[in-house]
Image 1: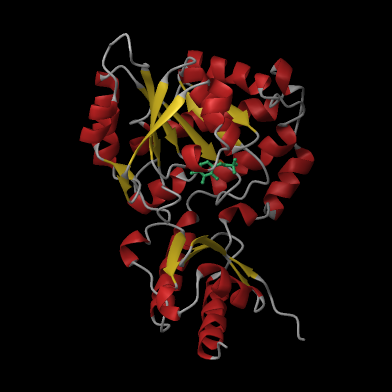
Image 2: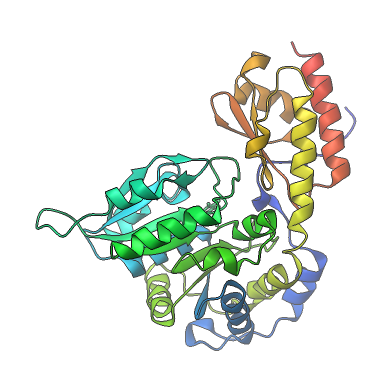
Length: 349
Ligand SMILES: *Cc1c(COP(=O)(O)O)cnc(C)c1O
């Protein structure tokens, strides 16, 4: 069999560090970050805080640790936190808020990731001896499970206001908040202003090999640092990876627009293939949710069919697969993938 080039749409986490990142990592000045001595980590944290308009920031190994340390730093045992029912923190973080922070999670149904502010308001607990305290509301932007949809700014603002009125803080799971900013055509600070804290990933569309940032008020970030240590995330010469993070923030943000254009191109092409369906309303950033029911194939079968032809993606619902565009997938790769999918569908068993 001839070698086929693998076109990998599984996630933007598969992006490899760029040559420029590798060189920066090679040259990085380092020190022991647990002592606060790593100049490259310190520089990344400073750049990150400025970029999202917060007082301080801390570098963490993963987005999951970023979210969990934020939940831990904002809450006390027995509190309740409010999340959208498909939120990553609820769905994919191994029950972390319950295990690590001892809080219970209350979920609210969203529309394309956006909760109704009136429902959030109604869910915030009144003062009553029987009730847990609602200490945190989490928003996710972009929203992963809905296919990378952008939670609108007015919605974030309204939730931020009802949360504060009810005595709760707001944490933004902004794993892909720069995709949201590029998608809306606004500075990221226009988004992060409606959250007290934010977590974002350097290791997804921004191409770093490892790492996330938590940003927020200074005293909160001090508590997050302590929680990070508790969870075993205090790293030593972390400047080696932080060096890539600096390039993520200074050089890799604007190019996300290419990923968004490629996602649109992919979605439009898929909609021309009989049996496949993409709701274009949901194609807002770098993800394409593809419905396969009319093809007569469930997601995993379609996924297997294409895997053998070098087009990789994940099946995330029984009749849905998710394709993610990123720096390691070019426009030409998208066109090639569409050719392969068209052929495979035409000749399917
Ligand atoms: C990927 C992701 C995370 C977690 O990041 P990891 O680095 O994989 O732990 C959190 N929230 C959202 C919305 C994500 O997409």
